[in-house]
Length: 126
Length: 83
Image (cartoon, rainbow over all chains, first blue to last red; front, side, top):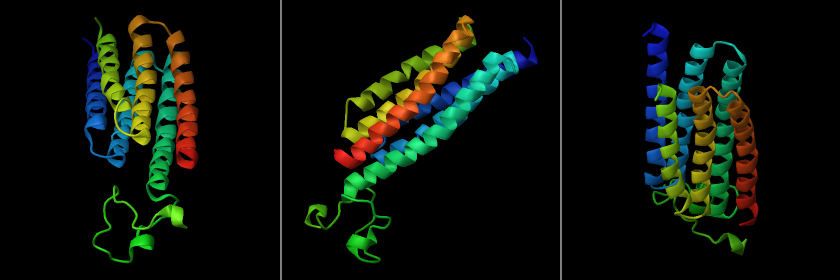
């Protein structure tokens, strides 16, 4: 077994392990914001490992370049999508976009806190 | 069974947690399951193309990765504004 093949196997194992951890973590976390964090390793670490393995095997041939394109697309688009998803969740939570929950709860209110917290005012009253 | 195929099979099995996520929680939680699945599918296709030596699968993976972003983004914007 050549050194290249050993490197490919290690990269595949690392990528697969990252994928399993992320996939199992997503449904077991308690809220959406936690879940979104576990999508990042999948689209960066796992995709990077698989792409590197393909590049080691195929070098910069068309399949290698396509694998590189898949990695770039996943890494770039997933971060944008995760941001948009978190923003949408926050808008749904508070009724409109607000950067700081102290806007509706008062500054330094110890009861604010959680991302799952509900607004004290009903957005429909505004 | 080569290492590419083993990894691809594991990735396909990882669709089960994504499916569980899609079937529970509210609409936003389900979107997280959809996003998980939309990352898994191009990666699984990438590995399957290596395992079977079919480079045509890579075109599908590229298209899937690009379209998953568009689909997911439209879904999220819709949920943000109207649901």
